Length: 451
Image 1 (cartoon, rainbow, N blue to C red):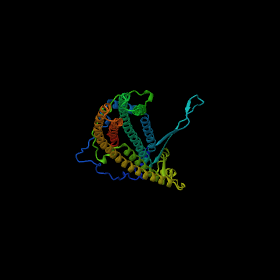
Image 2 (image 1 turned 30 degrees about the vertical axis):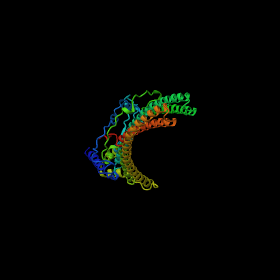
Image 3 (image 1 turned 180 degrees about the horizontal axis):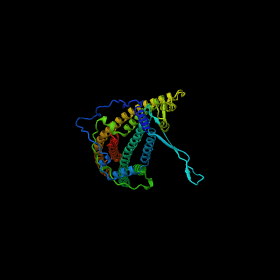
Image 4 (image 1 turned 135 degrees about the vertical axis):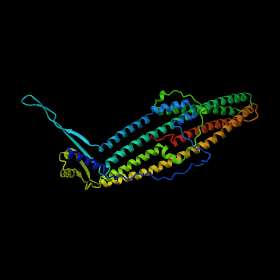
């Protein structure tokens, strides 16, 4: 018994003192800017609320985001990919444990005295000694790939929230354009009544009447187009929520009721920890680094131990014979091992480039959203003034045309200018809201990896 215990201790010591051929992992070096463009000392960075969409002050948006997170099909599929990766990680770590089997004949027999006899089974325990760290590397690669899928799901969730917010903002903008188109159609009808009255009085020709009726038909067609756009926008939102478009119910809200949150980004270096897509590639890199170690271990002998055989003959000579009988050294594989190592190293090098490009893209996303936010805000202020002036001009032109002080073309121009100014203001408002949602997404939306 003592000899058996010593044998087990010796085997465990052999396992624990195995070599590890996995290269030491180091995150790729990337030149990170110290601050964002146009960032000043006065811009005090603030943390982002993980529920950032609530900063827009819209109960309808909050409801849409919650429904999307609960029922979106793409997000649910990503959750199942995480479960698949979890199962694969469990499989990858299984080789670190002994394989235990039971073999034998368990059929009942009866002797001459009528006594029942049973054949006993034989317990077999096999274990591959992790001499070069390959099995540990498989376990670590499986865990890294599991985290990669977790971060991929988190990245998709962040994209989904931003997409829902943008789709909702777009729907509100279309509803605002529909209101403007309806008002414009009413204005055109009012002007048409004036034109027809002046034509009946002989003050103008039939050309002006025909042109205004053409203007009315165009206004009606524009309104129909906006209604079509609204239906398409509603269908888009329904799909994001995991619902059939036929189940969509009207969402109340006004574009002008939304709040404009203040966002001051933290330093660019924070994106390394606050962007799930960056962490996703980092985990893929760790898995690829482990794969290199696995490929290297393939060049070295493998030691498969049958503990039941060793325990049956625990003497040094027996141990040596058992180990020699179970030691396998690859001699010639036709380039398979070399190809596997070259593939693992090339994959690792590819992911380094992907990691660097992902981080550069993350920096660009923040800069793009910040630039659009800044310029859209300036445009919105200017267009608010433009709409006020255009409305004054249109009212004056309408009064003057009624008394014959100006011609029809001047009135038509002021009418069109007012319509353009109103639509441009809506577009600037939409651009600003979308830029804010994009900025939240680019900054990671308050996401942090679970510790």
